[in-house]
Every structure is written in structure tokens, then in C-alpha cells.
Image (cartoon, rainbow, N blue to C red; front, side, top):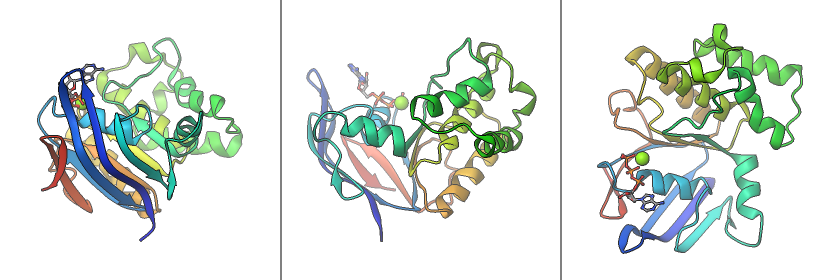
Length: 220
Ligand SMILES: Nc1ncnc2c1ncn2[C@@H]1O[C@H](COP(=O)(O)OP(=O)(O)OP(=O)(O)O)[C@@H](O)[C@H]1O
Ligand SMILES: [Mg+2]
């Protein structure tokens, strides 16, 4: 199998609190896995490290076989080009429209915003029931709408790795199903998907399920 991410002996503490304790994790292209665990056990901490937003205190991280934490800018470059985030708190810019929020990462990652790119976004907006809201500032959206916008933003740049923190936390079962189907479809296209979720019913058909407990990932 074509390994995308390989992590060994990861450790992360905040003060005296050990959150990740010699954690090992690996995932191949086209795989989709879920992670559950009690509130505060370290799921977001782990996702932020996998997504190269944050650094562990120690351990090894290989992305596409190369160490991801070397020299200035390596983490940032991989993150910008290859990783799409769906955050627990959405991280949208309130005063920008839905469309501008989605285009924003493309602007600072030097992705050309041409007709093809816009068409893809329009298709996503339609798929996620957001078409009518394209010009609306995100501060006026409901929680579930914001969640869907943040998902379209992550998918638009077609990253190799999608890291999603409770992507259906604010959605009804119909919209949750749409999100799952889309993430599943993308994984079949060779993208890798890591999802933190408590929605085991919607996210039942995945390659592996983990529980984060005592600082390590255990198979469910
Ligand atoms: N920057 C930080 N400084 C200090 N402590 C932190 C920091 N970030 C996280 N923590 C602590 O680390 C632990 C793990 O937090 P994390 O956000 O990863 O949990 P989680 O599993 O995502 O929880 P939830 O399910 O509630 O989102 C928590 O006890 C939290 O208070
Ligand atoms: Mg969290």
C-alpha cells in the first residue's frame, strides 16, 4: 500500500499534562479512518499535529516518505499544498461571503482561480445545499451552514489528506449523510481522510476505527 502518513512515538504535553504518549499512527492513500474518544482526551491535539498545524514535543512524522518536520517552511509547505482542514470551530472569516471564504485558501496558496475552479466550487455549493448563500457573509449563517462551508473550503483545493474534526457535529442526519458520502467518494479517488467523530452511525463504513485513550490510539 502507498503510505501517506507515518507517525512514531509521538509525545505531546501541556505543562504536566501528558496528552499524547508514544502514539504510533499510519495511513495510506485512499484510506478513511475515524477517531473517537472522551472529551479532552486529545483528539484535536492529535489532528492538529497530523495536519501539521502544531508540533509534537518529540517523535517522528513522515509525509509521503519524507520527514515532515525538517528545516524552516517544510511543515507549512506540505500543509498549504496537501492538507485540507475541517475545524471543530469552523474558522471562517465572519465578514466575508461564503464564496470568498472558500476562495481564500486558494488565494494564499497560489492556486489559479479560473473558470474550472469556480465551476467545481459551484458544484460543491449545490451538493451541500449552499448555493443560495454564496454571497452571504458567514456571520449570518447557522452553525450547520458554517460547517458545510468549512467543508467545501477544505475540499476545494483537492488535498491529498483531509483532516476533519467533528465535521457533522452540528448537522442533521440528512446533511451528515451527505458529508459522509462525499468524504467516502473522495477517499475512493485516492484521497486520505481522518475524521474525529462521535457519529458512529453515519461513519460506520470506514477502513479502520480508533479510540484515543491514555495518549495512544487503540483499534475499536
Ligand atoms: N494550548 C493548550 N494549552 C493547554 N492545554 C491544552 C491546550 N490545548 C489543549 N489542551 C488540553 O489538552 C487536552 C486535550 O485537548 P483536545 O482539545 O485535544 O481534546 P479533544 O479530545 O479534542 O476534546 P473535545 O472532544 O472536547 O473536542 C485537554 O485537557 C485540553 O484542556
Ligand atoms: Mg476537540
